[in-house]
Image (cartoon, rainbow, N blue to C red; front, top):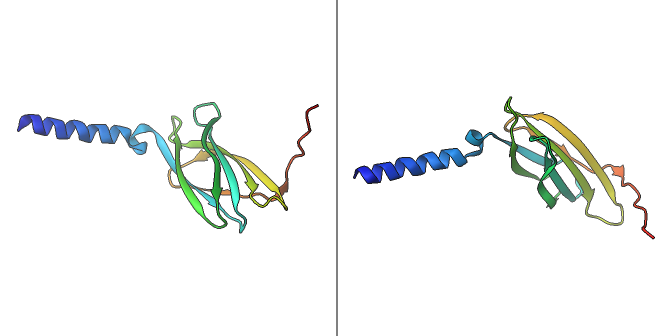
Length: 122
């Protein structure tokens, strides 16, 4: 019986350690605040480097997803994003760097600007 209790306590501790709140994670909501479908890339900047979290995720117009990113010593996250409209006829782009995120914050993504012109390699 003691072995069973130790096993249950050990598994409970393991679950708590893996939890984002205990492990230093910040959960944020990513909201496409347009009617356009967007292809979104999200980068966790909380550990001082640009770590991809989501790549090429399609977020439909006025929809959202939730992600967890690393928290800094003050418990805040740092995220950057790029977005491109899925519609190739009227291609638009957007990007932003968003520091100081708290658990439960919402980050609004959009693509309202002209996309940069890519130069062809010769």
